[in-house]
Image (tube, rainbow, N blue to C red; front, top):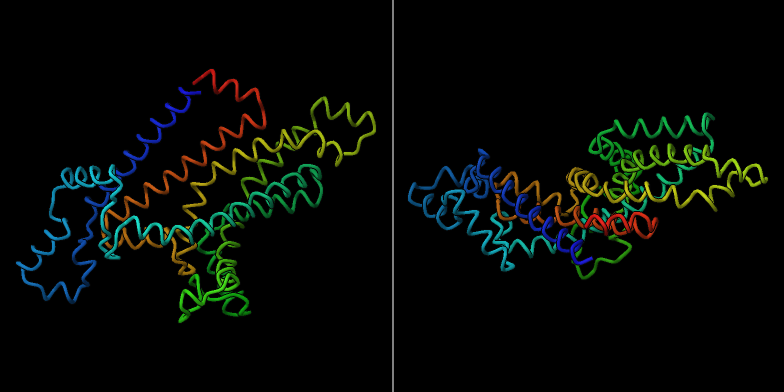
Length: 328
């Protein structure tokens, strides 16, 4: 167990180091000038060369990439992720402020897509070859080929513009003080982005669960149960759920990275102030410190999801727990 923990801790540290290094490298290779992006074209054109050099030195954009990354890394190890150029605030504060919205959005979409996909997959597997099965497969294939930003725009036009059931964007009503925002207001603004993100996440879990359901129904112990007179629903409920839950659980936790990528697009479409929107803003503004902080936070989230999946494997199937401990 100790070796298992140390191995995963070492992998986690190397992952964060690689993600932060690649992020800084990409920002340094980007043609975006952070000073110009943050000041604006008109203000930048009116600056003298001396003033530009002063701003570059103040923001550290003129420092060579190796030295700049080394300085950031030394501070990050001590808990200081730097200061965001775009928001003029500590990176940790920007991430903490935006993370609550993103985590709420992703959590709602993650649960909804998992439950709906699992239920549809089992239903399609039980009704293999029938009309219900064809409808579920067609629905999943259509979703798998639909860009999440396009789906978000369609839902925004239909349910916000035409029907007026949901707000056009943002996480709170425009012009309302944060102290006056109720839970119902926040939920109302969260609903449509969460629905958009959850719809696109249904396809993989539903199709994989369908195939696994078919395998379970064709197994020997299911044939024996049917010979005893048990119904298909009873067999799936009492004998198949454990075998079906393991691959579904695997896919759900493995899909966290896709979920985060989808949330970036959804937050842009709905102007939802989360980490995804902040990442886009940081990338367009050459804000290396903020972009690296968000990349590290998202990598930690994905790594944590995969680690939880590995641990839950052992809960569902003790044989896998023994194998993991032996390998560690």
